[in-house]
Amino acid sequence: MIGTCYQAAGLFGLVKSGGDIGFVFKNDTIFVFLVVLPSAIIASILGAPAWVVFACLKCDQILKCFVAVVKINRFDWMKNLTRDKRLDQPV
Image (cartoon, rainbow, N blue to C red):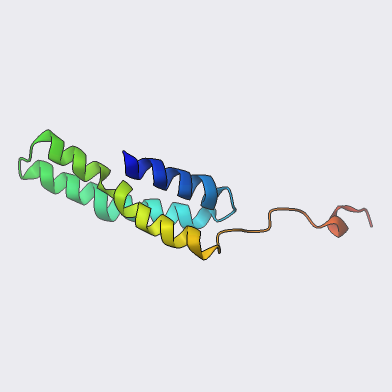
């Protein structure tokens, strides 16, 4: 749950609200379809206990923390979301 607290605040709070929506979408899509679902399906097929399957479903939260640290510390997620004053004036 600690991973969820950090990565949600970092990726959704800072990166997504800073204007880099595509990165968050790609990051979540890759982790869900390439890490979470395959590992949980394999664990359930192999007859793993419920806590192992739950851990497989939550393992992406810890992995996304590393991605969030790198993305946030590069500061390339901040986009200019304000309008240009010249575009607001009628011609």
